[in-house]
Length: 508
Ligand code: BG6
Image (cartoon, rainbow, N blue to C red; front, side, top):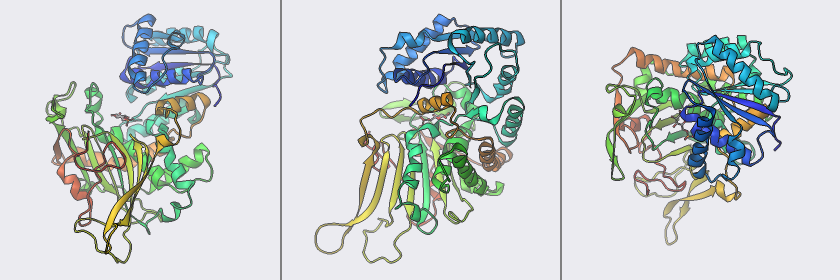
């Protein structure tokens, strides 16, 4: 991998959680691997009153706190933090943007040979236009043969209308090839490995369709609650926060046709086609096909855990969902009639993201099975943690007769190489610096995903009587989500931290 050209990264919303938890540790890790440009500067921009020295100190703390967990080397830290500056801004002030431009120009003299600039908007979407307008207009006296790239954090808009409006506005200011819409799930190694599993192996692809697959289940569970983000989460909820982006992108990669090449647009075109084929759930069916829930107070591992409504920044009567489960179909030749079940929730028993392909049962049952055990193979693609793949199939138990046992064959990603799996932000920030848009959502993809979500948002808005079910923190969500899965004896898989284990109550 080559070092990108010299540049400046300007982060808006720099004092937020994202900068310290994800962006700074990712940039730092790239720096230790010599994958940052030879010369770069990091300019934090935010509303808080901070000096550059304060900002550097916070960066240092964030590297120590968040890098240790993943084993980064922290010996180069002074070199890295020395590149950081801070600028306090009032986003509504034209003169502040003028001053910001001179700060960028001054930094540019040392760092960006051609005027290469990356603007990371880690702010709420309501500020995207306000920030992009002054930056995209002329006025920066830096060499202009470099690039200007804009990264927009998710959610990209709040609904179909706002995302369309945002796209239109941005297109008046900048080109689509300057826009990097962040969905960090696409930066996860194991999400990209979905493509390799499907398209590098001849054995899976012939089975990957309605003839052999009974249903597909995608789970993204988190054990944490909303933590310090209650304010943001109140206006988001799990549908906007996880389903519209992360879970639909995983659905897209699981269900897409083989792309003609690995070019960004070849892959994005196929994901778009999946989104275009998603059957929109009718408003009147939302109540039965989409279950929403909210975690309530409970005790987890001997500790009292408060309910969502008692979290900081949350309305005591809030109806915001912290859990969503739904059933939908993809109306195309490959997937006609195959139900897709997806679910996501905060304060679940464990943190796990995985795709489960349930194959159809063999057409003729020769062997008796224990009552309550179901035939049928499953392929489990584990996105996190314990990344890997597991195939479940039946074997004969030793001894007389034909007693059948369902067994596991598993591969763990860590067995592949003794290297650290790069964090999603690391990969994506490197791609932005290198100008590769493959792992970023395109305008039409984002809008089409919102189009699928829209009737659900509308139904919830127009029918407040649609229940928000409570579920005790630390459990697998509200009971009614079990009835989404049709078929006698069929349930969700209850994954544990370790790929091969499966139980309602996992070992901690
Ligand atoms: C973010 C959501 O996009 O993804 C968070 O805003 C969520 O609410 C997070 O916790 C989950 O990401 P990961 O990588 O920890 O699965």
